[in-house]
Length: 260
Image 1 (cartoon, rainbow, N blue to C red):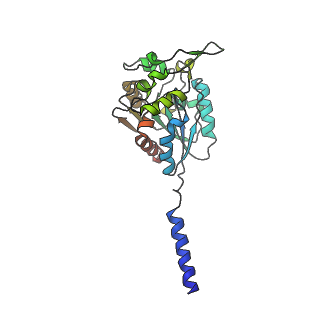
Image 2 (cartoon, one colour):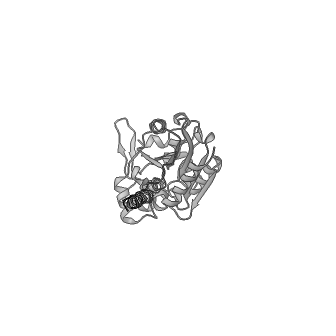
Image 3 (cartoon, rainbow, N blue to C red):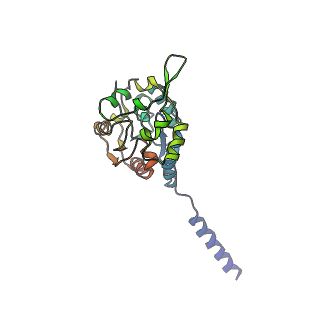
């Protein structure tokens, strides 16, 4: 009888440990880069899905000061990771992850979430103005002057929901408006360097209801970058990662799982 009880206990321990085991850690780390007027918590729902599926996730703090310096900052984060990395950029964060000069060799793929994918010499403001439909300019609050003569830009909190997050619940978009991080005006006009998307595979996801970056501009950039897969979410706003986290997470996981 003691031997039988011992064996039974061993079975319980084995099955119990199996039932409650954490998901196996995937070998790829996902580095999420927020854009202007957002912050790292805008990735919370996507990050939760990715972590549940076994990925290590870093929601990096994007300084929003200028493309070259911001790319160098994010590049240092990616370079600190042991193993392959997928860089994911939202909005202006797409320009940051595109910077080839700051992209470390362990980055295996890029994912653009309602994001800019500029070519060498292009900037965010010019790309937005090249296509009709962007209404960001008229939604901005009075700028905050900086000591060097440049300006910090915010979206007017009363206009934030309609402009930035039209498909997000009003209470949540109001909190997003209050916690938004400003972008330095010069960051939106700084020319990009040679783009990493010319040598790395890219994936795109965006919504048809985007008012910050015209959907036509997003489609143009996805096609030009030879996107391996482009997902267009009907009616989604600029913060598609907040309103449709499952769709965004699926695109990121496709990039993480893809072979070179």
